[in-house]
Length: 192
Image 1 (cartoon, rainbow, N blue to C red):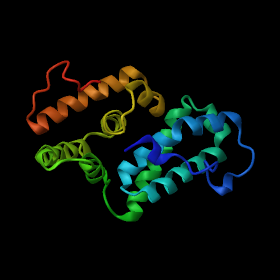
Image 2 (spheres, one colour):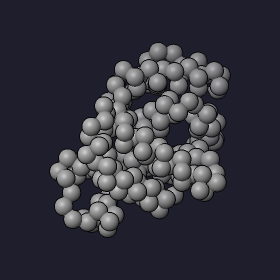
Image 3 (cartoon, helix red, strand yellow):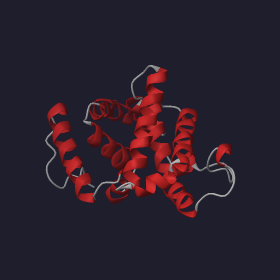
């Protein structure tokens, strides 16, 4: 999934309901987080249209409560919780589980040659195992390994420390090792 896939069309960065002058700090927050939020929502929902609608709704909500959000211990954590909740609500409305397994697998298949298809099929088991990780480990793995963010950026988006991201990666690595029967040794690129 490329960054350009989620460039906001034209100057419209949020819904028409938010037309007008935006607080500078909100506009900066939106600018720095909208693409990552869209990629995360798309991985979960499997539909660009649903992702755009959900993220637009999240930013509309955030603008309405922006002054309260700024008083939270972590604005990023507050916004991340709003995004997760909105994605979960949309999944409930759609009456289906997260689409991450299919979305990630089909993204990995783009440009794949026939010879690499067998390798890609083995990734399906990995994506299924990722989908079964605990919430925070799942989010970190999606942001760092599937959406391509640096661990520091994932930490900032989620409102947690980089050390916590590294801890979630280690926990996810152990869980995935057990689940898949793979022994990832230190330094094999899993920690990024």
